[in-house]
Length: 41
Length: 537
Image (cartoon, rainbow over the protein chains, first blue to last red):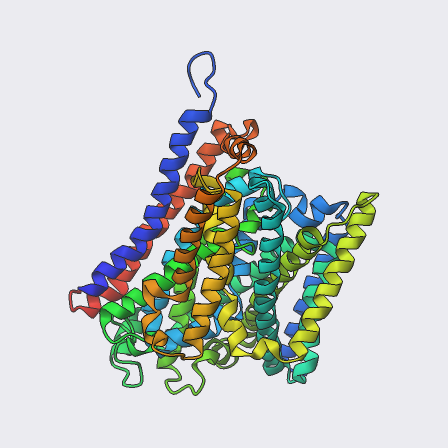
């Protein structure tokens, strides 16, 4: 059973780090990217 | 003269030529120190990964896997990989934004304090010289084995190679050769894999063969690995060893000058995120593949006297000669790339952070920097000839000490609004001394410390705890000045050049690639190991 949890954790850590990167950058993009006249980014 | 000898000499000549070619484009100290701040994603990712992976990664770590600790290494590496995301987000991007040339300079500018710059410079020189010596020695020993030449000659050849292009081309040559070396060991390892796996009966039979191999360590396929080799007494202790060492390396890749410092050469802040994502995937996926090659050898040659030589043996005995030569050149390249990075960081610190000199022209400044780099290189060679690099105690202290002392002032320079110059300086010194003293107590088996100072009381964490304590104390006694406050405020503003939606869109591709790599890794581990090992498939 420990091996199954281990396998999920290994991929989960890498995927989790990717998700954090996506969330942080998405949040920042909303905050700093200027919108054009139509309100689009 | 064997094929390995020719391969080694040929690769040295190629690295030298490329480094010298890069050096011709160096016009000023901006080019020399930070490669004109123009590094692309592949160059930054290449130098990050190549600097992190030294000869130890191909020998000591692989011996650890062969002896039953592949799961320990995989967990450790994956936690370390997260540092390539945390590092640029929490520190690396701000380091680049400061437009400084060295990390000690960043500390000086951020905290408006010349003293902290000097302290950071001295710590850089001491710790990276130790790491450099250990790297040169590793490459020298490996080259001696491959070429049959005397050790002293090999040491000189290795030194001549990386010092030759580092002194002439600075960072411009280092990131280029680092990336070449990264590609060499990446492709060599990928090419060697199928031959090694096939020789032991195919990758699909690896787990079954290991289960039926009486010579394999009985715990090699358990999630905790060989418990005794981690110094623990139970499965929990063994996993904790991997977790704490993983966190140590996570912090190391986030803040040390030979890792975080690479971000200063990036073309943009977005490049630091993308390169970090590539390095994170390589640290998890590529190293897992490399570790699998090492444990496969157990089914081919189960009684290896020196497990550290597992990949060297496989290169010479299992894979075709040409690929074996490429792999051995790749292992040597891993050592050379780390050595060139360490030498460049030390040289920059000596000329920029320690020697305070005024120059009349950019040309004069560049010439001075090159001379300092050469002098540092010669000093390192003399120390290596004195045998300092082969002293276990030197290597023992070298790798992570700088992270223990810099973690709080570095991350704090961004996240900790109240951290003052005094707090940061005291934190740096406390981390450094706390680590050295406690590591000394453990290393020399003094009193009961050997058994006490482990896991979250590991000397690295003792350094971190002391660093936090003194950061609070120093900041309370000597609060932050208005000038520091102002700089910190400006540092938090995202520059206009970084505010392009297209860049964020491109960054997201790398984030999704990490998620995909994570899902695939879990599936491979589940289907190839965890489920069959537990009798579920």
